[in-house]
Amino acid sequence: MKTIIESLGDLSIVLQGYVSSWEEVEEGGEHLRWEEGDPAAAFSLLRHIGLGWTTVDQALHQAQHTLHGIEELARRADEEPLPNNDDVSASAEAVTRLAHVYDFNTTLLAQSGLVQGLHQYLHHHPSLHQYHALSVSDLAHLGLAAVNKGFFSVGVEFLGAARTRAVHSHTHTHRNTWGEYTLKTLDDLLGTSIKVHNHVLEMRGPRSLNHATASTPYGNHGGGVLDRGGVSDGEELKKQRMQGEIRSQTKQKKKTKQGHIMMEDNKQCEEEEWKERRIHKSNRKGEKHMGVKEREGHVAKEEENKEEVRVDVVLGVEYLKRHGNKTWMVDERPLVERLQMERLCRGEELRSSSVTSKLVCRYMNGGSAWLLLAPFKVEQVALDPSITLVYGVLGREEATQVRVKAVPHLHQPFNNIKPTRRHTSTTATDHKNTNPTLKHTWMREEEAIPLQKLGRRLHHLLGVAITDDNSEPYMVADYGLGGSYDPHRDTHGPLRTPPRATVGERMATVLTFLQPPAQGGLTVFPWVGAGVGGVAGAAVVWWNLLASHEHDFLTRHAACPVLRGYKWIMTKWVGYRGQWRSLPCPADPSRKVTRPSH
Ligand SMILES: O=C(O)CCC(=O)C(=O)O
Ligand SMILES: [Fe+2]
Figure (cartoon, protein in one colour):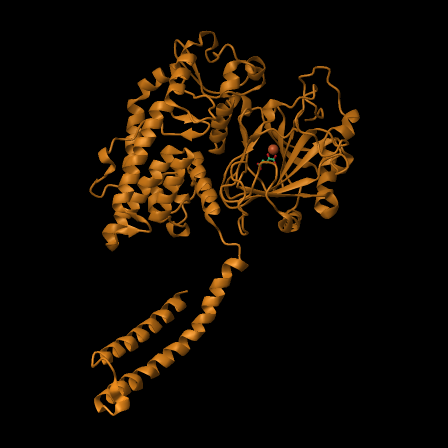
């Protein structure tokens, strides 16, 4: 393009010169009467053409090469799947979600790249230039996208970061526009987003399923014009917020009494509705959030005051048995689940050490003679429900083989899920019902020998048959930019029928990491309080069913957004129907359907 621009620029200058020379000639008289023998007219014309045309001719010939380049560019959109507006929206959403879940440090973000913005995740400090720095326009676009998506604090901070960058580049380069933004428009946008943020916080509280604000308001910047004489606004905003947080800790407690955690709210939440809910909640005397004594499950952390216990984390079987059907659970479960998921994604440990200290890692052969000499390393992630990480179920070459086979078949899942393609084009489908961060394909074991081997290896270890005859095929999935998977259960349940009657319900899940991402992308179990990071070639195994054939609620899980790198997984849902006779049959319907060793 640069060559084309240069060449077209040269051509334009030459043609301009020739045209102005002609205009100069024209000034000599209305008609050039050289044919009538006017020597002055003849000279004028001769000089104009004789000196000018050689240059014009040369420039036109040179420009002909450029035409090929132009034709090539004109074909590009037909031949290559280029990103479109939908792709930009989906990726802006993904990046703002990353900023929200991983709590980006926008001050650093304004100075350098995305990963530099992740203070707490950066264990080593590679040099700044390794990471891409977002431009003023990028940051402003992300800020607006975040506000539109309901990530209000992320929006304010991205816009603050955009302004900081603009102020710095303004002083250094004397430019005053960045794409469609000027310092004035950035000021206005930042001011407005702060107002919106504070208003939403006031009216709806800091969090619901579809919005998030900071826990305290940002300072009021009257009229939205910020002029801080070179102070970084990103830094300033964060500082203010932290000071505010400290100041308002006492207030915070009062708020908690009124029900600080907001309820699930799928509709646009109106001011009146929020007020009504607060009244409703504070009236709910008999149903205060459960106290320490009421719980026997491993609730990890809580903060108590005289009137009410603020539940920080809700985990465990016993708790769910007692409270699973209460209004509090029904109303707030999705939000509690989401909050716990996000904390686990950030790498927080939600369980107490009395729980985690019981977890062991050992070599196991599952009672199979085949594994006596080569047992599997099995790490317990959780005991109840049992979640284990089995190392080395696939070798590196085997995992690559599976990925290579899957690539040509990857597509957006039809079942509510749509991929963000990494390298290929997304068809503009309905964004409402889709997850734009995943592509998948189904693969039968006859298509790749490593799949047959994996089935045999785990059959020996787990004592259940893992073949396509009694299970669904393998599902291979590739997460794109910021790819994540919302909390869900794997079982079909009463509303969804298994693909084949002989397969039945999804008794166990075997989730193999073909390629773990470089950062983020944990698989987390919000109600267990556990997360497991990908280890190449390892598989996470858990059991989904209770003896009553209901699914075990505690096995609900989610995939955290991929922060850096690519994540490839392969899932095998082990069918129940073909092998129920060989499984232990617990009389208690609340017991798990599992092998005794698991
Ligand atoms: O990718 C993950 O970590 C979870 C995937 C998952 O839950 C599934 O495939 O059902
Ligand atoms: Fe799943």
